[in-house]
Image (cartoon, rainbow, N blue to C red; front, side, top):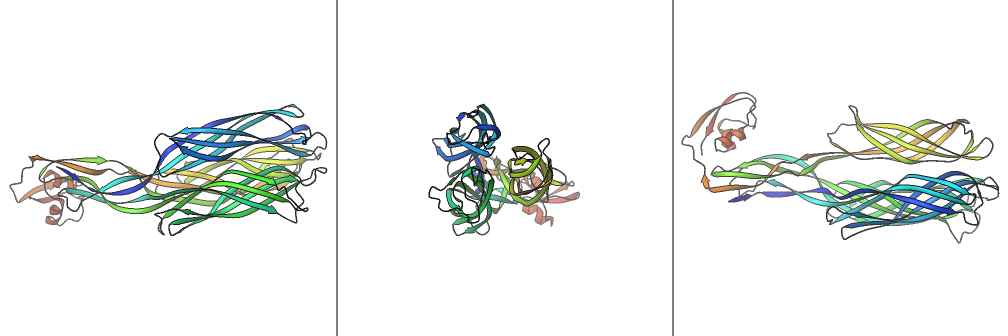
Length: 510
């Protein structure tokens, strides 16, 4: 005879794919006719753009293009100029298991890019970037509770779990036209950057509303003859309503947005002297929702009538999840060495990295970033300087955890002050976040096989005296004497399973 226990489902996050591959970029570039000759290369940059993610037949295919930008000093007017070219890429990832009700996450990070001028109009470039791919799905793990009609004796413990109740994703596009009457006109773009962030998330019936901001930064020339660079910074909001069933007001929501690709270009029908720029953004937002559930988990079971063999399962389940977020201001002094700066033309941070370390004080995130400085030196000649800045931040760990996930740092603002011609004082404001989670293996009984051909002998005594030692458990004693734990508790006026001192117990027979 087999006793099957009732079960509850706890939603867990199943990783069907988590992989990274290196994509190489090799390019021989010849300047277009409208670009002047190169006198000096200032900066070569590589920006991967993801256009599509398709999961079919157990394979995730990611297609995109690598945008290569060359900032240089032209040989005629000694101005900063830019040349751009794209290189398409495609990558295939094989899933380790089939995925149903899945979400796909993809991102890319530049590893390096080397460029060499073969002539004033020809360059050869070699670089690489890392393409990260992840496929997640929702998986239901079972935990077992006692059936009301079961004749088994069961030992249960009340536990709380964080159950993944919602997992949804949406890919979307945003278009915006930027126009400002108080800015000089845009004649040629030198550098263009975009980023996306989340500012809020909330539940509406059957859906989740996510909102945030897109930040666009543009460096351009307003006059090709004078070569004077200008900056244009623009922020605009975005908002998405995503179908996400099984969420309610008690659901703890977590959202992640990834900028897949962006295109910033001059409008062909630009009128007047004001800059008019078209911005197209492609992004993907992923939402996870967790609800707390309680269950009396069956830890052990036996029969008072027959020999019994319980069977166990050991799912690893999430018991808590905590999101830590803070805005941090960091000040750093950057030495430009032999480059004597008269004026900074543009400054930005790239290649952020963040390594979490668990200390006695809490969670310390050691962060690094490359500060890129495009400037004019004291001889009025364009120059470029790149330096690494380090900073750290500690979150007090006042919750129980055994995993640190999603350590991330995002630039919020960047400013500088030129203290002398070889030293910049940089003020960097960043949003730093980390996710702490705690999980445990839930050792529980799934069913019990009782052998009816092996009945247990009944006690011939109504009561048996037993001298129990400190730390013994009533459950173990009841199981040994083939009786019920609740009868021993009642007979000896006990309230807990664990004996705090040596005791003489009366063991009722059944």
